[in-house]
Length: 186
Image (cartoon, rainbow, N blue to C red; front, side, top):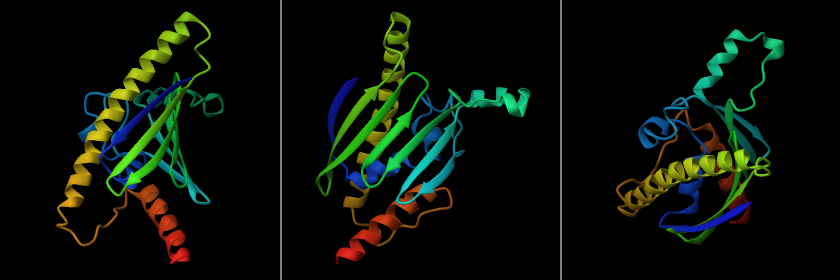
């Protein structure tokens, strides 16, 4: 297991939103995730206040040639489990990450990330884990930059409202649940 803590100049909800949709893959992760994954193709499943977003790798196309009864999706998808309100668990071929978003201020978030793997028991597995971890860290840095830019945009106060689009089902699910709790308290 590896633990990394970072602080971002962005609201925790903006950081969470980056985990919950895939239409930013081409524009934000052009040289990292986009060559391996599709832009804006994902499946969102809700279970209670939680959700799972499944992002296919391009190599999933190989399954077209495999008889349906023999298809296995292991290594073909990244699943992001959003455990409401502030925990994300993301699966990758060589490892899994659990990210906890800790609000520090309206415009500041501590992100605690645990990297876990069952492949680290031998040298080849450790190399795959390190490569996967470093690759995911590059994508996370790109997401951090976008979240901080969004926070700066919000600070400009140019908009009174924001509309979620059709491709933001998991984000809408998150905010509806959050509003439901806030409404219950108010």
